[in-house]
Length: 386
Image (cartoon, rainbow, N blue to C red; front, side):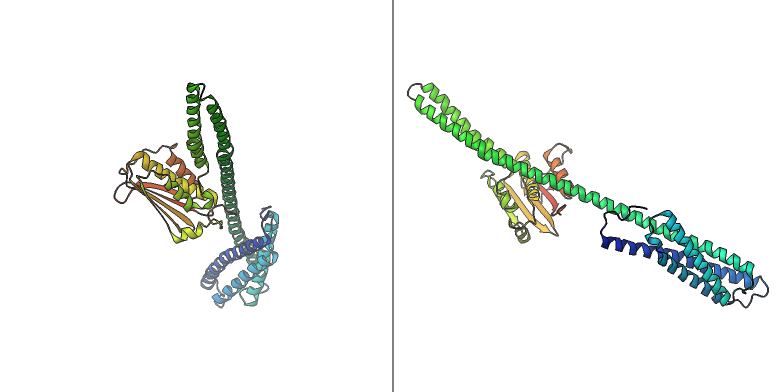
């Protein structure tokens, strides 16, 4: 039982001690009272019906003695603080002392109310021994119940600590991922693109010098410049967006709007964000963290990508709402009818569902209201936040 209170605040230890004391005393009193009432009825029946000369011993006298005994047992257990003992020997000693005191007081009360005469040594000795055993058993059951509750409490707190540790680890990994994504995206958008621009400028200078002397070389240099421009405009910027989407720092709503703005003009789009969502998405507040925004944006990206890939969608509608600290994301399209597919654990949708599950959320893909596909995600906000 040692180490029960390690690393537990004083206020929590006090509440734990109070809870242990209450459980111990209630369980001991209940068992002792049950024993006392049963023994009173049994003894009164046997003695008044079988033993001659005991007709004058009323039931209430035995009940009185046993009630006093229960009260003394509970008071003694509280006085010796059995609930605070941290070793088996201390618990056993306190329990036996309380049971002995209860037995002595109960026997004296029996003599006082006339259950036994004071000179009936044999009967008093038997009652004393029986009371010690009954008190020890009652208190022992109370201790057993208390220890069971204490063990359950330790397991619950250990599970809570493990869960918090996992949440903090996930949060740290998410923050590190965001940091790396931002650094790589800034590197692609800044340093690499700048170097490509410098290379293009030097090629332009070489092209100008060679234009009059070698038309073929000038054409080759022009082709290289066009390729560099395409790499800079398409590949580098696209990779930068994949790593760290545009306008994510401004909030989820601006980032989703920027994503929808890159879709072909032939696809109609709409974005509806509730007032609660807009208030919570304020970049000056920390209600929605960057990892949460990124995960939510990935839901929209995956739904839009699948809409373009699996069906000729002409419209994509996105709804963002917050209810009870849970972010609700709905992406619906009017493309091909929903067709359930075999679960692919390496698909983007499966990986996204796993990420949401780690964050305490869930993802559902199903048919739309009339046609197309509806993707719905629920993401708890603030999970793991200190």
